[in-house]
Length: 223
Ligand code: ADP
Ligand code: ZN
Image (cartoon, rainbow, N blue to C red; front, side, top):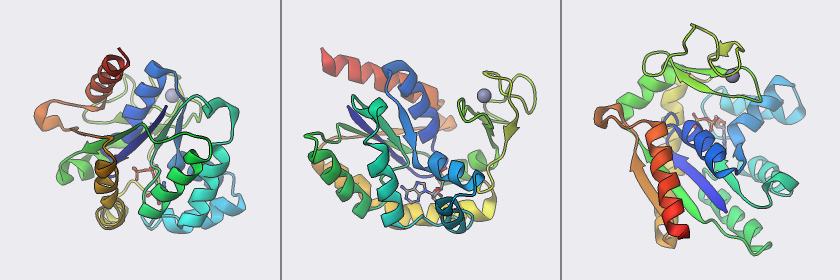
């Protein structure tokens, strides 16, 4: 099963994908995480990607598509994958369709998360992530704080703020989203596998609620 997480930055793609991954036993693959790992390790790819990510711009398609293409060949994702943050352009979406078609696979479900813009900015600025690559738990210091400040509840590692989680970068990330990524909503809507849902504190619905809703939906469809 191939599931895609779509939505502006800070809508909770990572949170929802993480819970779905656990419940459905399907690996979560985040292109943002892959880039951050390369940046940390100062690989050639990391050095290039950092130039875009630090400005809140998208990494070029060719680079991004190559990475995902390689990742899709690995053993652990043969039965299913939750793609978190990919595709982000129509070109990426078309390439993904082609890559999957070669293996007689397709995109089964696209989860589109919608959050009011002012809430997005607030969330991104308050976001803290676990520094443990194996854990990657996400917290919000206002809405969903850890029990002990600066420490991950799940694994005890230090919580950090992503370098690109600041007001200036967020604005350009939102701009990229609305100009370049949001046409994918229509792209998948036409294919008939889009599931849009709102994540917002104003309706008391957070990432974990949405994840439960989706697991229920998938279970129902299987029966
Ligand atoms: P968020 O959804 O909060 O922006 P991500 O971790 O998904 O966070 O992405 C962080 C950054 O990595 C993006 O702002 C972008 O620069 C880059 N990136 C991630 N995925 C892609 C992609 N599919 N195409 C191009 N750039 C990407
Ligand atoms: Zn942790």
